[in-house]
Image (cartoon, rainbow, N blue to C red; front, side, top):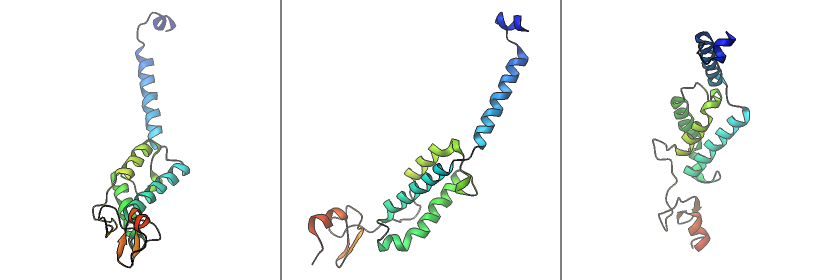
Length: 144
């Protein structure tokens, strides 16, 4: 057997065994779940995404919409990755999961209302005149 290997002729049983081991290793890697830190990071990215859509956690828009927003986000996540729970996310799915969260957009409009002055940025600051964007608020201050 050693002579066969040194001459460069393929040893079918050895090649078959290597192939089987590679397949087993791949299957084992696909079963490894994300670490606690990775799961914590996924959830933090999810929260950042919802805050980006709804505005500051102290805003009325966030306070009224965060529960449904998180539900919609994680329900979609579990459907896409075919999971019963976010904590079942596999390690090999981690990068793809982060990308999915970053590019996720809700099927319904969750965004805060537009700034009443410029209508270009989200109105995340409540004023007596209506929602105001951070830039406009810094520029003009509280309306009178």
